[in-house]
Length: 454
Image (cartoon, rainbow, N blue to C red; front, side, top):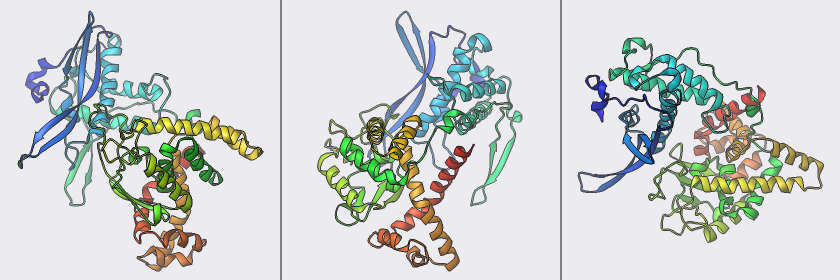
């Protein structure tokens, strides 16, 4: 695979001077079996960039040599995990399909070797305007920036391979930074000048909400228990622990530790990367934790949490031997897209119940929620707002008193009894673990607030 991208093998680069309806780039995942030194077998997943030719009803597919780019070791963590590989592949195939195939009549490129920086600039502008989605809706500026970062790395990778006709390593500018061990690293700056980024003040962004009023939270979870009980515990974990949907469906039955009977005083959840459904080739719906950690789930309503957990373990865990805490209707480990399906059902039912209320205020909530854009991530927003005020105050008092134990600072806070009731029966370090993720959560909350102000 490497030889196809080396400078003395430029002629091997696949050409594209063909009709666009015959060719397309796509990616697929494969499983690779490796035998370790102790004779143990290890199954690894790899994402491949494929090029397909379709003619006279016959499809021919080859692995494109640019796949090597996806399998580069990242910094010091080695080859990216399968989810990251898939994300990078998506950015690549969208770019290649756009420049080399869909717009071949405009750019007239016959191979990757003819790429220039201007092609990247034009693609990124188009990507920001349509998101390369079927509904042609614009996307966030940050997403375009992420794509720009990967394209920068791609161009630099190809230049190092001496593949590009019009670009060399001398055409890149670099920024430098230092790791904690003082080793110097040089990273190429984006060479794509003049990109028109999407307007973050678009109606789509203004209509995106990240929280619901506090008085509706328990009702929301109770609605899940009544109408979508299979994910009700997951919704509570998201609202009271800040878990993402991909993290919820990766919880194992042995990775959760209740505090008190059926989690009356909360839970500790071990979040790590698991593959409960190895028979599935696609990883798009599987979900995965963003950060491996132990997360505390707080009993903002302990009695409700008990009911949810007891009902769940008695009726809705996976029965396929996968050890998954969340099972689908067939008893197999639940995937991300299944969870999202149930959440959409919950969302519709919740709005319907609010709309049928005798209270005009509650009916106004229904109107607001039905006209806004929101999904499972709203639960993380709920959690952010539940802990933000108390977490900020705890840290301020801890700093002023030089306390190492948060419990020592709590008597000096407003709302002391509420916080002590939450904390006193939990594991001693549960709140500390929550504070470790506080910066990430509060930064996300601040970013969301800024979006709402624009």
